[in-house]
Image 1 (tube, rainbow, N blue to C red):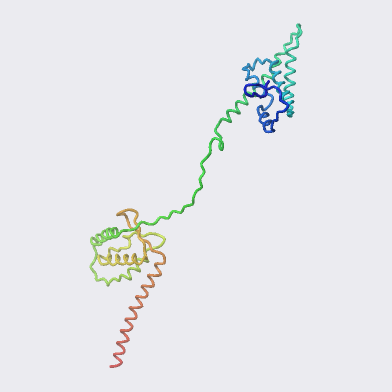
Image 2: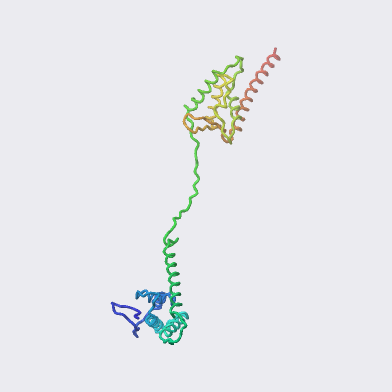
Length: 290
């Protein structure tokens, strides 16, 4: 049995001046995984029937391989030597003549070897089928990507002036159709209405734009309320948002808006009080002079 073929010429013996690297010997040893693998290779290479093994020829080829491993000074596993002894026993049993009067049928000496070869062939084929299945990190590589932590800032939609006028027009229409008694109302102050509107909204939640108007006050009342809302919007004390064109408008207070409007109202009230006090003092002085 040749161990190598170079340019079509088989080699059965090693040249004395041939150097074989240790790595090459490792490749040679990995050709067979055990004695059963070697026997199965010898049978399939010659297209032999596994149920009718020519035991003499297979034994000869097997022993040539074992002797070759000895010449290469390779360490033989015990299972290779055990299989060699088993083949020699089967060969001797088949060569020995049987007594003519022996009625006891011992069966085919190759039966146990054939059974083991068939079982090994099934396991080897199953292993090859499993190995052919797609395997992660060998045949399939999952895509990996780092998740970037992006904080999306959603700005509230801007409210156009025409949207405010459209909503105010609806409020005016409701105010005109509301039946009420004609009573004399006190003059309304835009500054006081600004404080009232700001106290009706919160920074944590939105309030409907129409809910800020009291239609019972009539046209003048809703006009003053609109002026107060526009002034608060101008001073950035409130915010308005609208989800869609001609949709409902919502209002909420801006940050620190309550402190600012309270300060403005207090200052205005102090000015009015001071004016009234000066007028009273002047009147008292006139009376004293007279």
